[in-house]
Amino acid sequence: MRIPRLAIVPSGFRRTAKPLLPAFVVLVATCGPLLADSLKTTMGEMAKTTKEAKAALSTTDPATFEAILKAYGDEGKSGMALVAGGSSKARDLRARFSTFAATAEAARQSGGGPVKFKAAFGTIVNECRSCHSVYK
Ligand code: HEC
Image (cartoon, rainbow, N blue to C red):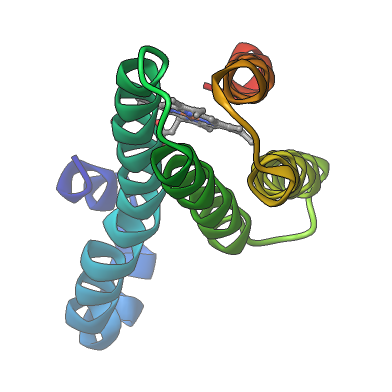
């Protein structure tokens, strides 16, 4: 997908930039996908944790609830760290991931049984949906 884009670079530029081109291609090929992939990776982890959370809704083990809420908190922090830049979108995404992590962390710290876990899970899933409705 990235190679054709180079074809539209004006030929004059292509001539001057030629010595730098291999380095540029390597840079784009390594950094570009890395950033996009990491957010997808974090989202994949969130999806996996959500599967575990759904399965845990029919259980009562506080340690399982705590581990799931811990995983959500860590994933929210990963999301925050992955969004760079000062654009309003980047700032909003970081704020949303920060809220997400704080929600999970507060629920983990307050502990509790299945009823509290179910309520926290509902809030967390709403935060997934709210962010996706704007950015996914
Ligand atoms: C603060 C924003 C935000 C939150 C919160 C969030 N997501 Fe996402 N999610 C995104 C964005 C942005 C994308 C699109 C990523 C891309 O295409 O690179 C995405 C994509 C995804 C994808 C598709 C990944 C792929 O491979 O295309 C899944 C699955 C997903 N999110 C699951 C979740 C789950 C589950 C939660 C909550 C537990 C969640 N997300 C919370 C922003 C968020």
